[in-house]
Length: 553
Image (cartoon, rainbow, N blue to C red; front, side, top):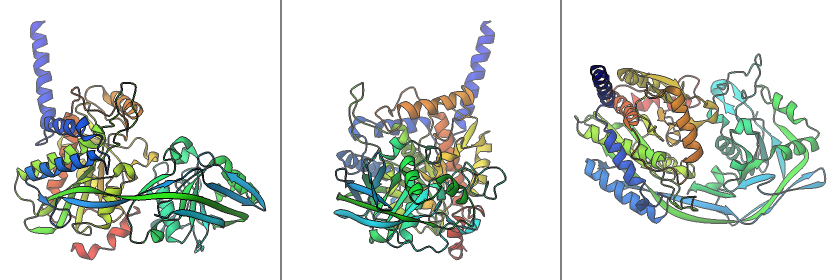
């Protein structure tokens, strides 16, 4: 019996050693140490514009220097100033529909949720015409255009949430054209607001339905009229004056008052020949004061300049910000430390940098970014997308980490946004080298692919990969998929964005180190130069990348 136990222990130690080696030069202990530091109370929850930000930036710059990275921010610095604007609707305001001469008053946060991202003192919309534009999708690669040349100037566009095929039944021509239950960018509320602004609309309202949105009305109104954006040269060109949501009940009232059947219109909107429909006899009015202010936050960006192809690059990124200090929880804790969201991702970026500095110089430039204001709407990375410090046209890939699981080695890696681009082939190769497989995101309808800091870079055409532990439980060596799913459920319910997202000495970050090592291996593969990953033919980002193809020859 003693011999059997000894052999079993020896086998267990050998297996543990082999799994640890899967992470190559990425050290789980270093991941833990960096995360522990950034998630400590000293950094006050790392909220942009707070005293905690100043401490965070000082720490990151010091560590980037110690790693031997060159500055890649503004004017020879490690930091890039990110000018942000914060807006806040004041009071309840006044909102209403005029329905064929009858006024239907709308109560803010009950019937309508409204925000404004333009820095104005007052919003005043008087009896603006309403136009229903279906899902509001313009997708040339899919032969789809919901607008059909409609003039939205001075009007309020009314949208359905999600994609045209979200509720499609088998046999409908649109079924599967937009990924089925897997959301495309066209499903996102951000896209619909942006498209309304591009077409001159004064406002954009989305009909709320929980299945299509992926969350209930309580989530919609959680911001209570607060909004954040980067400071823009011409906000009126890029943002509608009012953006918001209508409750499902009020939306049906609106359509019925115009003599329209809401459910029948939803079915029509699933057809490529859908035409925008004016809500005849109905108008929208809104009036409220708006408080607005500016704050300057900072990205931290370092690099290793490529030895032979310095103008070509690979980027590794994660966000440094969390939710700062809030109300005390049951234990009296007020700091929301963001240990897994996303101090551990920043630790991963730093570990990859350390690994590359220990090896031969890369042919291509390697960029290492710690973004601000992800939790305010991906604003640090969005600012970088508008003001890049290396050319995005010759960036081969962006590799982003946001929430890495702390439960030990896994047999697979969960991929968010599967089927988007050829970087997935490199991921599969790297995973196979660790004896692992790829599992697609278990709930693609939640659109996690569009909710992390790689996305502002993706929308400029750069192929991307995202590792995010919230896309479904990993198949853990200890406990399997059941244990992985249980952790995702418990983390999202009890810790995500709260005081409970704390560092723990009980974590086993070997699995996180495995995931970070995948990006290191992909980076090594791309760093030698020559390879240009691309989007799949049916990706909404393929045409953007193709437009700059001449710069990658």
